Length: 347
Figure 1 (cartoon, rainbow, N blue to C red):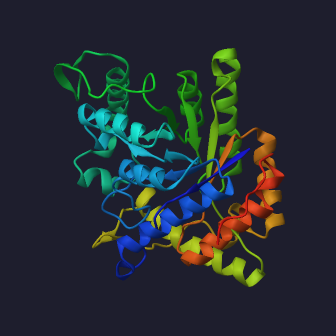
Figure 2: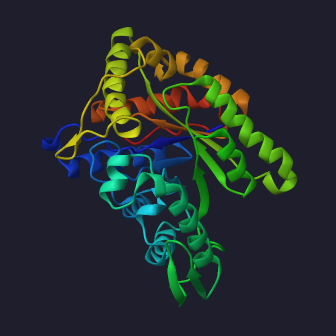
């Protein structure tokens, strides 16, 4: 099982400054590269301070310029917010500048507040995503492409420069619904998913959807992978664990507001709203605890055959503390699940 660090920029205080936020995220990417993590993961969100990253391809290029081996995943690019005629070219250039380390995670968008203020009604996101994906794949694989669809109509064009890799970067589909996972896997896509705040039965169903599709595909599906995103942090005392759970609860109070709630935002700051899930249930579900507790919670994921865990430690904790937590995870948790030797990070 491989591991990624999700660089989900949390911005709880405007006075901290966006420059400092992204410097923190770059420092995590550098450390992940030094410690042998398989990948770092970049979100895309606009107009809100939760998971704040309006320019994922730009940040991917920045990370690539400062690292050597770590893959750079988008988790995820929101296709309905982009014009595929220009985005395809931007993607090819980013793939060149990241020297083939870019992995394109794709989705339709999850925050109604964000989507509708950018002119995409939430009830159209699936249809827009489906057509956008078809257009993007055509532009990346065919020289001359014209289109006459519901959302795109254009005469023959050729994106320039042409993709260096056939079909462009490796594509991963962000899907929560188990049947959606099954159908996307059958189409040949790698999968990113999450049980969100810890619904174990949902996780089992998600893994089953992926495995059913791979089984039916035979050799054609052998290389497809399943990545699981989870909030997590290594702690060393019960008091520290309690503080991290408090921070995670505040993070989810904002996330739930945007994801399933009313989307209450003032001046770019998402409101923290009361949650239905109890603190105890949240604490049980998250990957927050001692190194041994992390190993125990990750064990079932390895047993299920999950290929990559995308760990998100960015939910309001101190920047240096987060770096220390990433290093501790690499040194005390990762060796239980990967054959890679952890290299001591430069101080």
